[in-house]
Amino acid sequence: MLDLEKLVIDNLRSFNRQLPVPRRIAETPDAVVIGPEAAFDSLDSVEFLMGLEDAIAALIDRRIDLCRHIEGMAREIVTVGELTACIEQLVARTRIAAVQA
Image (cartoon, rainbow, N blue to C red):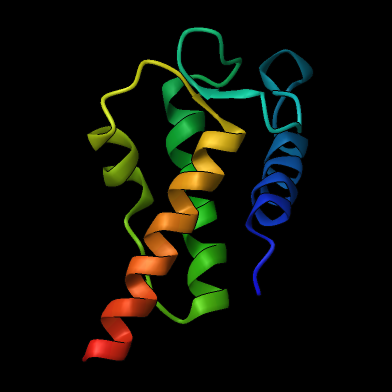
């Protein structure tokens, strides 16, 4: 079983290392990744999500469009925990689709 929260936080930790300290965000489930309270700018958010998509694809051997799904949530604020829950849903759907194919 995948530990998706660990995956998200590990990727966040790695991404944070590339940024100057003022643009880093906390590596906790309640940290805001997207929204006005996030230290990430919009480009940081997209780059982080795309890197996360790559990490997920490497684990499940399928690509998910996390950026588009997050955009479709129409939420002003998205936390690490909410992002993890979103990924869990997308991975489950991907697995069901693969079994049905």
